Image 1 (cartoon, rainbow, N blue to C red):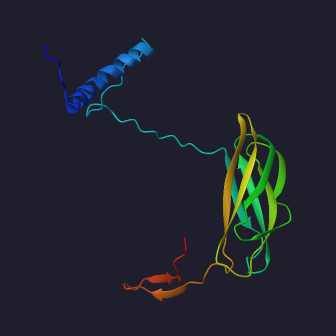
Image 2: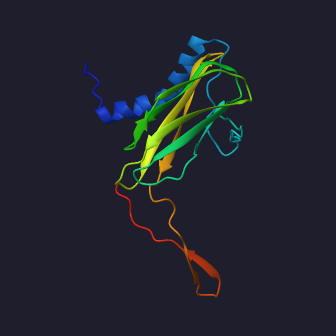
Image 3: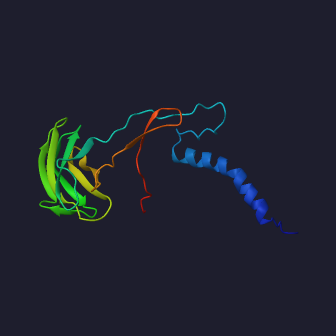
Length: 184
């Protein structure tokens, strides 16, 4: 009697052909009431998620003083939550090249749902450099545990560049701004 010898290619095709059937058997064995997944085809409708999922905490950062090189600037971090939060705090996560003058963390206490809570931080803008990204985090104890959300503020020491108004090729008014590539 001669042994049956199969090539690895034949075994691979045999296993690939059996895989969908084995999946159905495995699902049925795990849960007798379950059904095997239907094969995708042109008749099946696609499911699209159209929910507007939003984070329960919104955070906004604004400068209270003019941003100038070598000067101090106050930044107000304002948060609003759709959930009530306890033990809430706002803190500087990264000064990004600026120097924090004063507190790095401010306790907000209990934040009532749909009401704003704010904290002020003071930063010293360096005398040189291009842009500084200051990062903040607001977090608190929610109904399902601790939650938080971050926000950032782009400190541009020289402020916005003034536009030069010119006439476009079709006679329209165009505002031109000088630009340069930022290093990565």
